[in-house]
Image (cartoon, rainbow, N blue to C red; front, side, top):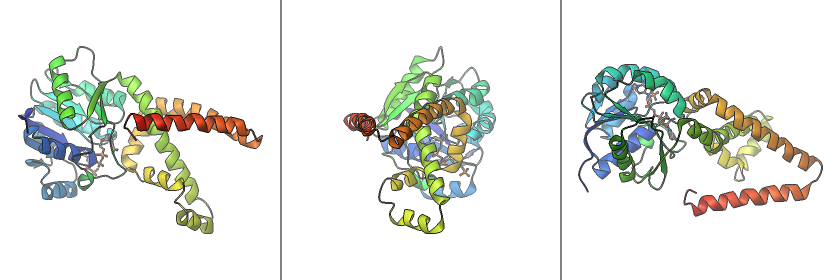
Length: 294
Ligand code: NAP
């Protein structure tokens, strides 16, 4: 184990992502003191039982006091509230980052509250599961996965390098991206697939009862994969769609056009068109496997 990167880190929101960071940071010896905070008493109780932090706080402000790195790990809809609570207590020269899935909304809600003496470097680990809460996290979650940092103009290179090192020592690969570009990319790679899963599983639940029973019984085919995605955290996903509205609607428009094209191909028996399409998409899967992101 190498030297600690930070004396004290604060993790606000100790659910799936926050608790995974706490575990990985502990395992890698990245901080001498891990302070955690969560709004939920039940979550704090579980986090204490799991010994996720060296100190556990109900007030986010108390957790961030003296922290050299603060990581906001709550649903996007709670950012403004958390920002108000922590801003007056952030240490001068410290780093404020986060894990939120939509970056322009983070800049909008947190940005104006961050004091000038704090290095604000938003981030997003492209890693997760359909589970939530402190018990669902695990230290290996970020291994071999990308974390995207979306720094602001004039960012402090040394602070960004330190934050990058924090992520790489947890096993992640780090890349930087413009916030708007991030939101567009994630709209197609993550947000739209979740919307499709939520739709298809919702459609199945609207079927007549006897068909519904068979859907569950024979779900070994494609449907099962959709149910896993559609089991994801409802609050988190509500907030993602409300806060990445434009990019999601843009991708949804393109998707609808392509769906209509495939619908026509099926209607008119255009087998070649379907085969070409499916051959192209098969190649995408292969490139994801080659990139070790499968
Ligand atoms: P989670 O398991 O539900 O954890 C979030 C935690 O934050 C919960 O314990 C929640 O408590 C707490 N919280 C809510 N409002 C709070 C407040 N005002 N102050 C303090 N704590 C508060 O969610 P998660 O999956 O870790 O997601 C957290 C963030 O990571 C989200 O912004 C999400 O976009 C991002 N993210 C998620 C994934 C993923 O796959 N899950 C991947 C990458 C990034 P309650 O349960 O009582 O509300």
